[in-house]
Length: 119
Image (cartoon, rainbow, N blue to C red; front, side):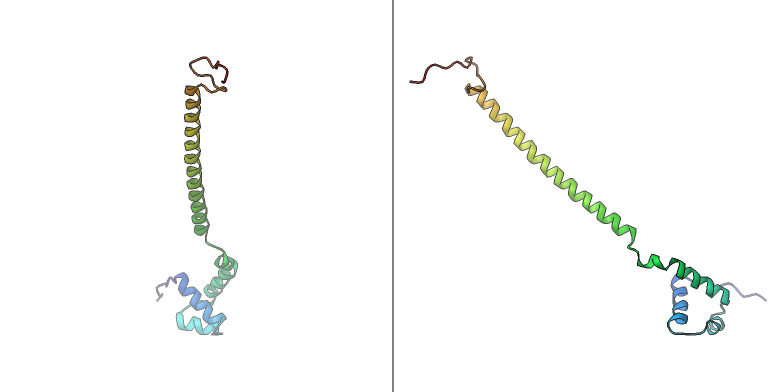
């Protein structure tokens, strides 16, 4: 007569391992209580120690979110600079047009740019 196999969640596995490692409950007692083969328990323990560093790493999603937010800030800043530059260029072009229309010495206007003597 075989029993049905219980599938433990990662959280349940951690609780069982913690009971052994922190609370010092012997593996044999955990096996009897949970119907757990010691080889399965030691497999979980091995996996925990091999992959334990992952618990201390920062999630990749946070880094991606920060990078995305930084890109958004830089794009907004660049757009603002482009707007300011466009306004300055527009003012510059308007000033040049005004100077040409008035016939400044640098930019002769419709009269040919030759002025009479100042009196």
